[in-house]
Image 1 (cartoon, rainbow, N blue to C red):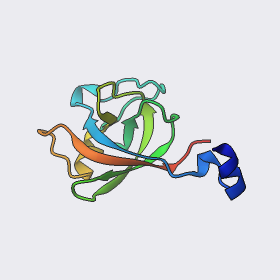
Image 2 (cartoon, rainbow, N blue to C red):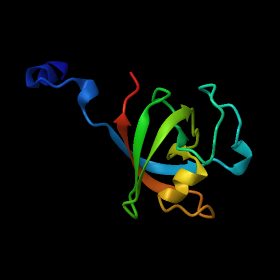
Image 3 (tube, rainbow, N blue to C red):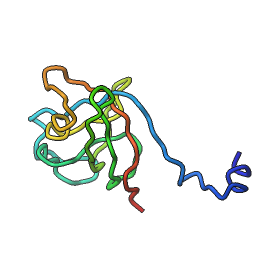
Image 4 (cartoon, one colour):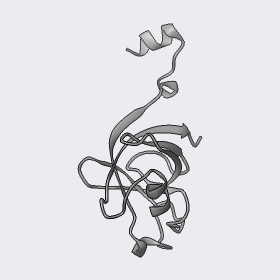
Length: 116
């Protein structure tokens, strides 16, 4: 498969990677706690948690129900719950049209800017 990409002049890292799952949000009790990256979580900023993306990677998040978009920066690891791809700050969750009482929104995640 790599040979096919090489013949086409495409690198695996240049392919658009996308995944659709659900995003949840950090509760207020996580505000100012240390994250896995060593930064303090600010629930009013554009921080998020992802299981594998490198810290500092900017992600473009789309709510698949409403089409609303937002960007966030990976600063933490998680969520470690089945079918959840991101933990978002409450600000980003609301920007995407999420209602806190619902707790989850369906999202598509794309790399907006890869940390090198």
